[in-house]
Image (cartoon, rainbow, N blue to C red; front, side, top):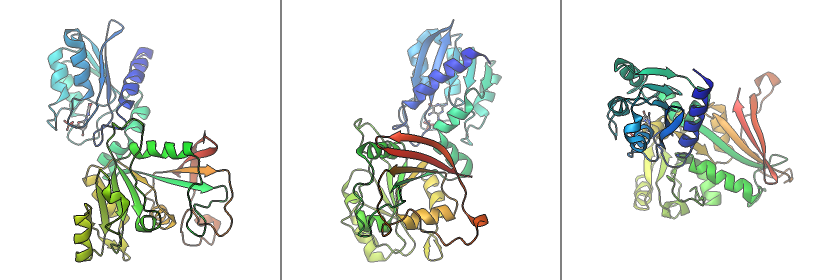
Length: 362
Ligand SMILES: Nc1nc(O)c(N)c(N[C@@H]2O[C@H](COP(=O)(O)O)[C@@H](O)[C@H]2O)n1
């Protein structure tokens, strides 16, 4: 391991980042082929079903790949998925050494890619900039290792912690810059999750609206225990898919919603409501890596209590909305300090006139 290894891996990570909005449900992966201290090939994975990063880099390098060092942000795959194994392509091209940032948590690979390369006489190193690589694919890693997606809950509030006036009016508490930032969060997510209360109050679209339209639109997921979703909801008229999780799906309403284009998932119930942990497991089975929650106090409170949130992103606006405004979380009262839910500030940043706080459970 050398300073050069770090440098080339950092370049591979920057390439992987280019796939942030397009590779889902596949991981974001970048690859650089280096020979005699210069880049002979590089590439990144653009779309599921398309060539992997290693194949893009090999294509660019042609014959120059022979004897090169390969820097790749995820262990090369050794299985036939939508595409053939990268290990065989690297062996065939005659690369000398493969440096991976992390092993592939996909059980079909899980170290097998590196072993296959070693068996073919290729030197391997693993773990260069591993933290950064895992972070870039935290959703994919979570799905493979925990069987549930990475869950980020987005919140937007006034300085006195209000998300709306008592009337429900909430447009707009935060700035256009903060809202544009949320569209980037949506575009980087596999699914956007909300509750039926938010749908009935706001009729949100929940799609990602970025300047660069070349993105995979997130799946829209609505938690709707009693299936109250109107078939005229705006999100049902948009491109992309909508999934409604309901534990009491009335057959007539179900038929009307299916005609309107929604898919209904008959969810298991927990205390009469959709079992949220079961919903996340179902989403993982559907290859959802990252979920962005954009919901009201009821769903935000239920997810927090069930310890199902991995990160909160709170946009805090410099204004006050008063005591009658709505709060961020509906939670049972806490009687003693020892029972408080403790969190940790991970990052604080200015976004236009607002603050963006990234907060994680302790
Ligand atoms: N090493 C590597 N480079 C890439 O560019 C990748 N996309 C992956 N993905 C791994 O292979 C699985 C997907 O395979 P198909 O695209 O279906 O052939 C994915 O689950 C990862 O394990 N790996």
